[in-house]
Length: 167
Picture 1 (tube, helix red, strand yellow):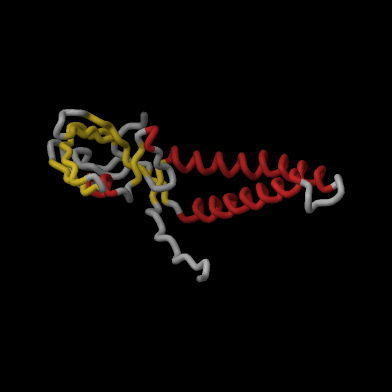
Picture 2: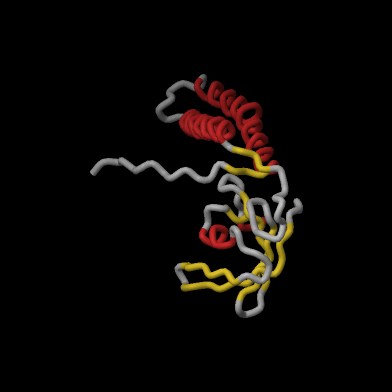
């Protein structure tokens, strides 16, 4: 059995200004700060003799490969993303970048921001526009009902607020 994996479907190319800056900061941190430090550590570890049993050397080389892989990905991704900075003309509808407050059938409210796939973070309430919930929300208006199919069954939400500001 081979190790072939079919190519992953590309995420949407849209990103917020804050998301692009976060990717650029990560790229700078990896390339200008972390990589030189790890390269120096590998260089020093290589001076210690037998590299086949030198843990610092082996793990340092592995970390360099991880850094280089992530740097390549970030460079390619930053070349292809499209930064969305403007507020849509119809602010009564849910579009990319909106903060949306939802209420479920039990009356519990939750607030989400619809962002690009490179910047989603559930802990910060940022939802990827490629997720099932965000796809169901796009184009909806205030007081609309939103139905989302999830592994635990169908979820029903009601849109209670739509805002276009950065928090």
